Length: 256
Image 1 (cartoon, rainbow, N blue to C red):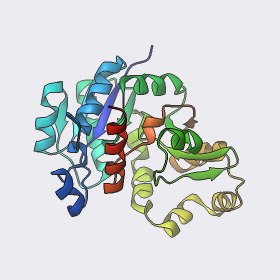
Image 2 (cartoon, rainbow, N blue to C red):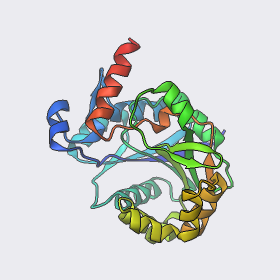
Image 3 (cartoon, one colour):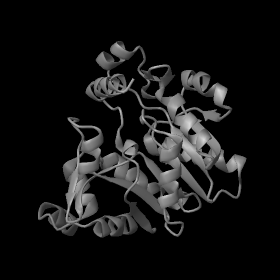
């Protein structure tokens, strides 16, 4: 049974109107019932039995919220990639022989210990980067009526989850490529230039496959990649905007 260390980048913030509604501008501290999203995530990681050390990257408020879990908390940098690499450095201080790291986004309100176990068990151990992909049909069956974004491929229609297993020893050499992807993520033209015309053509012509996605990870990052299917749907439900939050509140209320 494989066990790993985890990084939780918890520096994400939300817009002013959304923050006024939930009483915090820090995404990880949004409250659902008796727990914040951060508490839900840390509980899931701890109870999964598959995680050793955990490093959370966040503010003083984040540190206070994480204190009962006995995890290491460090301050964030100026970008998402920088926060991940700060977390990686902190994990290496705890375990110099660190092999792989699980990166968990801070906006998964429905994450459970079973979700973590299931995903880790499905990740091939011989791949440097594992990305969870969830079929739109399964997602919409569990969370009908959401405004989630999906990508159509020849294999089906998918979205990506917020948990990534990565080769910690190779990550430093991938930093430039990761920062380039992050910097261009909101620009359609920038991403098109980054991923190349052949990939764009396959996507537009609906001939793109998951194996094409894996190959693109490999060519862009210079490492092996795997699109991991049949993972828990809750890995893909994240809270970025107010409508995500309001949907999640109604979802929870309907099941209590």
